[in-house]
Length: 621
Image 1: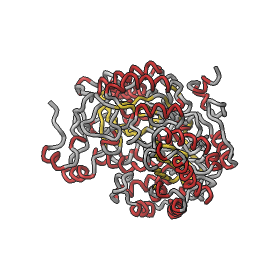
Image 2: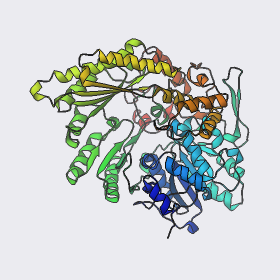
Image 3: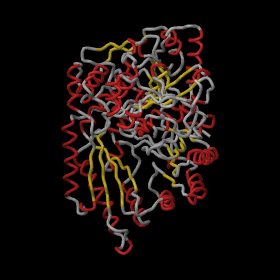
Image 4: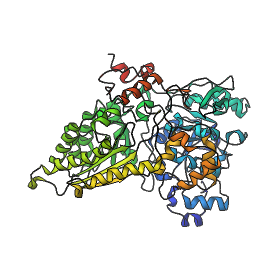
């Protein structure tokens, strides 16, 4: 019988002790004596967030299908337990076995969001693993980073032994087999890292050197070890039919952010929005087989007891089998107390018809993401959505009984003018006006329109990766411009306006496009107590500002500069298939306000066809 790592006395004093005891339905237990590899899979945020991450579920299932491997889970301890663990010197532990993370072979960390970087250091620190990879000996796990932020791993390069660039179903088996062989041959940590560096998609930061020009830009980035590749090519599963999927995902004891079965219908997106990193790094679009998805739906609901199933993708409306799949789910499960969640849908006649069948219209709200208020700005970002389409969709929704609408926009986009900013409340006003065109006796109460703006952050591997940002005061000023314009609208009482934290925006932007020198900032911030920076209650911008000063790193260098198209960027050594020449062309088309059609309308030669899969192959048939 396993013994809990935390005493009853501690569990009774902390918030939500179920976060730490493991033993959930469908969690995997194995005999440590009968396996060769112990892998701790980490999401560096609180349990409720980490348990909702589909990527972790997929890898947990994938690894545990191996008879020689036991994959367990670990999340960031919340603030209260963090304090207790430090005071009582309790090492961080895995949920399944409750064993210390330090005793594992691997610690794999999914890096989903820049504002979780200090939590990564918390995980290492509480595990008793030296924070810097260069200081680790033979007695601690190999620390692996993966996920979207691994596409610019440089700000975290000091803290990781290796990064896995791409989708986990491709070369992890090779990586683990190599570990077993190295262990059998009594090879060292360096021996393993050198052999791992020869595998496609594996990046070992210690095997590369960066040099800088006097102006701070990167002069060179070159391998210093003969085993290291000059270019790291992302790994991608071209054949979705050949992939496994968790048919019995772990069911938490407590309510988590996504407390439902999740059905991944496809990967990638054909739309080509110029601000969207996911739309570029996950190209080409690849669909899952519809009959397989139907089978997964049955099995997951049976094996979990969940009462809701959700479709997952970047743009579910673009899944070719959406209508058949949704109608199947409605017919099979709606009468059995199963709710169906349909995020990422375009608001068209079919979507509204479907949502009317699966939602309580009086309680639910519809979500539109125009991203920009003016048509000019939507063309710049290649949103592919006209005002006519937005108003038509809103009108159909209102006539169908909805009266609540959420609108999502971005401020601070490249080439944005004051006229573009004011177009946001003007578009919200037009939508409200469309509601009041419906005869009063046919309306469903008062119209409620909530508009929210986030501030644009130029991410690596997007056409906007060269764009400058603004000081946080400028972002606040732009939000005030929009707020004042909302007050001038005729239907202002039907509208509400929210905006994102500008200080978080500038920090996220600095970390997103940072290079190796940013590691000193992250370490300084962590040492000064920064933790859970993605949580507004704990984010402390002043500490981060001082961390930049202590590390002698200029935040403005990463934020305010427009990059030259010839500049060597920190992530240029990674090949995602989409070429830099394509991104440059899209940047130039954005400045010119030119729209690029979606992949299914016409191939734009982005380079993703090199993978010989998905929509790139479909378009040639």
